[in-house]
Length: 463
Image (cartoon, rainbow, N blue to C red):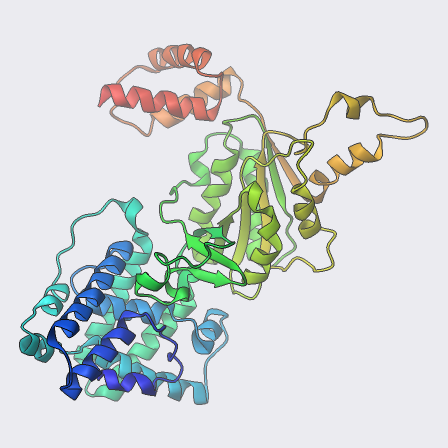
């Protein structure tokens, strides 16, 4: 069966270091009967090691081999899969090529390794195809991705078993994978909610690339001189979890929904006091709108030079991207903000319709002002060019939303609301609020963050 890999058309680019490619080389050598047994067994164990590594990263279970083959189908970026991601109907010659490839993948899916195991006196394939995984913490892998892999793997298995012949089975797999691309997209960009980026000399390091058992587009997403790394342990927070700030949340929600609907939308700056929910509000968006095609890319201030490259790498994908910059501010001697200004508005290249920038800051004007700026006023003029330069960045955000510290009544409402989510807290409301007042006095004042920290403490002593 592995000899048919050379006949793949649409899914031909599996990667020279992929497990399927390497096993194909091993089995061809095995079939030639001209091999060194110890060398061949050693190479098989190397591929099993890579399979276990991938299985751990993505939460495979039961039949690791079938989950892996399914994962390859889900994440292979080719003209067909990317076209389906963009919601363009498939027809004509491309369908016959894909159906042909699906027959090959179905045979790979149900490949019988028993002949190899018997001759070489090994049982590693039997183990990984009847595998009981150790329960893992969710932070170790993306639970949503894992579940989709296993669900699709089960459906492919059921389709092969229930089909009358290989052609019917291939048509069933074709339909399943087509529906998957349309529902979730393809590759790491399609499967994951959020990403961080890497650039520079460590872009394709040995651990993340060659030794992973996957081609570059399967364990990460590569743009031009940029690498997108999925963030697995994102908070499953929703806007409704943030108590209060209803006007602010509505502005943010309305702008985001307009963006997703293809309507005019603006870059957003959330500014105000620390601990008031600015970052939580933005992170909640990927939980609520992921299924509508929203993705988030976290960018740090020192990566501002990469901003244009990041945008160029995602502008052709059928998703909406929010580039998220947390706690954004610049000191007087820092000039990285000029890259941001040029990208938002001012550069020759127009920002694509599928990218917005959302930032949070404790400063309204983002760039620190000095007493010299405030006193630098000339006769018959407003502020000097220096002041205008500093204000020009914030003016490029079409929407600015202020988050201020809650007053005592609002703070008590936040404390009571968070406490209501924890039935293990048996304190009366009066006692709870009395203790909350003591806590905020010694922990930085009234804010949503302080309220959450207080409830966490109360839960810890009542558990």
